[in-house]
Length: 130
Image 1 (cartoon, rainbow, N blue to C red):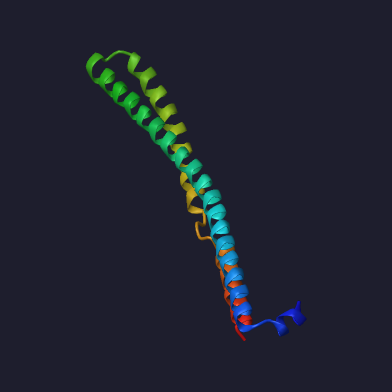
Image 2: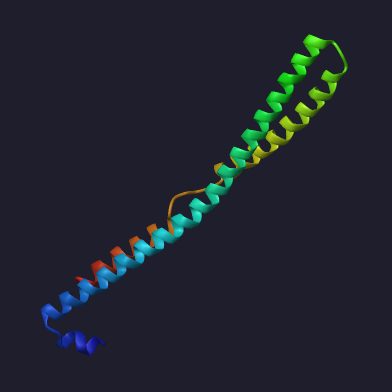
């Protein structure tokens, strides 16, 4: 390969460099797309935990409100049952929201592998032009 490069014309060398650069850019775009798709999938799952946890917390709030209404308006033991159910549902919702939040805070969205290969490619391009 070195022999053919030594004998190649400037036009051929520039055309080869252009082809290699185009291929490199396409590969970088594909890598970035793959990396961001993977991260977006994980973040989507964690947002799902937040959404489900929020809905369950909301149901718990409704049950707690029903318990308060029953407790104040009826002064009968049925409000105790609604209160217990409301606390249990709210507890489950809280756990799910905390799980989703904790998972999101640990998620790093930067495409580190892509950034590294872009740096390597910049170095490669500098070497090719020398």
